[in-house]
Length: 286
Image 1 (cartoon, rainbow, N blue to C red):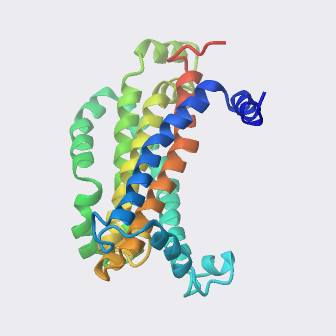
Image 2 (image 1 turned 135 degrees about the vertical axis):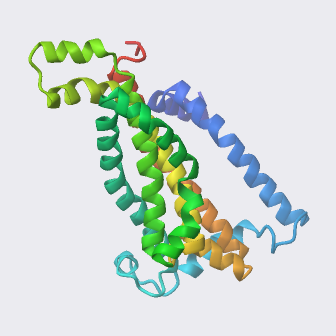
C-alpha cells in the first residue's frame, strides 16, 4: 500500500467519505475559476486593469497592511492598518446590528403572531417593508444621518429586523391552536405558552429568517458602505475603484465572500440543521 493510499484512507476515516466527497465537489468551481484567472494572466484575454493577476491581489494585502505593527494596532485604528480597519469595521457593524435587530425582530414577531387578527393586518406591512428594506433606503438614510456609521447601521438593522419579524410572525401564526389550548388548559401562563409552544413551533421559521437576514443584510451593508460609509470593505472597494486599483477591488470582493461563506457554513447552517432536527421536522437516522 502506497503512502498516498494510506493518506487517502486516513482522510476518509477522519472526515467521512460523504463529507469529503461534498467538500471536493464544492472546491471544483473555485479551482476552475482560479485556473481561468491564471490563464487570463498568461494569455491576456482581458487587460490587467480590468482583471489583475492573482499575485497583485495577494500583494495588495501586504500593501494595505503596511506600517501596521500588530493586530491590536488595527483594533485601535492605527492609520497604516487600512485592511484590518475596514474588515473590523464591517464585522463590527454586522455584530452590532445582529445583537440589536435579532431580539427586536423575534420579540415583536412573536407578539404579533400570537394574535391572528393583528398578524393578518401586519402581514402586508411586513411584505412591503421587506420589498423596500436594505439598499432602497440608502439615499434617504444618507439624507437623514449623513455619511458615517449611523447610515450603515440603519440599513443593516432595517434589513435584519423586518426579515426576522415577518418570518417569526408567520411561524408563530402557523402553530396549531390545539397546542396553545393544551398548555393553557393545564394551567400554563402566557409566558409558558410562548416558551413551550410558540417559540419552539416558530423556531425553524426564525432560523430561516435569520439566515436570510444575514445574507441580505450583509449585501445591504456593503452597498451602504459604498455610498454612505466612511469605512468598511464596501468603502474600500468604492475608493479603490475610483482610483482604478482593481487588485484592491478584487481583494475586497474575495474577503466579503470568505467572511459570509464562513459565517453561513460554520454558524448559520449548523444552527438551522440542529433546529430542524431538534423540533422533529425531519427524521435523523441513528
